Length: 133
Image (cartoon, rainbow, N blue to C red; front, side, top):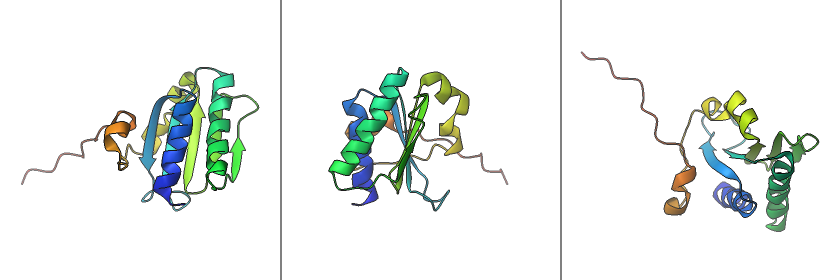
């Protein structure tokens, strides 16, 4: 299964359990550990656990591997490692505090079905102004 297919499965699994504010980041140029980071919010400990379980179950059902899950005990921040795609499910206060979107640099990922996914992508960030010569 390629990274794009895996990303779609992860996003769909999050949508199935009503995740909030799903964002997808391309991390290929930042780290060689994984290619995509998916970040989503859940409204309670129970929902974050359910979101992570949905991701894990969907990836396994599609024939993918889940390398590990961490954080299910508290449910404030649950990480699902699917190899080339890592999914973070956080409660809003934890997400705001750690600001993972800033860490991953806001690099957009455009899936083929861009119209369906546009609301989950980070807006294009302006680069530093070019020096006037």
